Length: 192
Image (cartoon, rainbow, N blue to C red; front, side):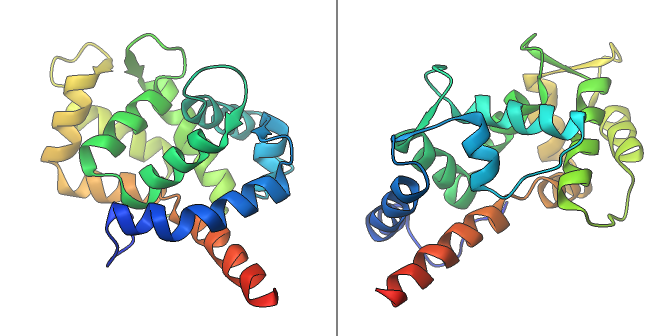
């Protein structure tokens, strides 16, 4: 699910934390990233309302202590999840991200909103439309047919269906963001 090959978590944190810290503090001298700065940091501008809602939900999932800011430790935790998180960790994060209203279940409309937003942010043509992807996910993993996915249904259903796992991870892959940060910190280091 988007892991960077050849690096242990120990190597990841020790090797890159200094670079990430410099990048973070350069972009955010206060040490606390606001939602506006978060969007700027990742080059997200001129977003539709639904895309902006998705990015705000993502921001909130990374804001672990729920104080309205992402500090450096939350930033590192987010990058570590994106780069080195295991399948279970990422699926739990995806679930939290999809459950936009915090109800503990994902409804089809929430899933569709996320897929549409991701589609708009990525700006790429994908093999399957957001509507078809949301329908497919629900048709395959809403085992009790109640129109919402519990955490257990989501985790078990995604893990049991390789095609959905692949489509989900490809559509939600954030490693390009981490790679951009990586590239920028590497080029800044070479300039110094």
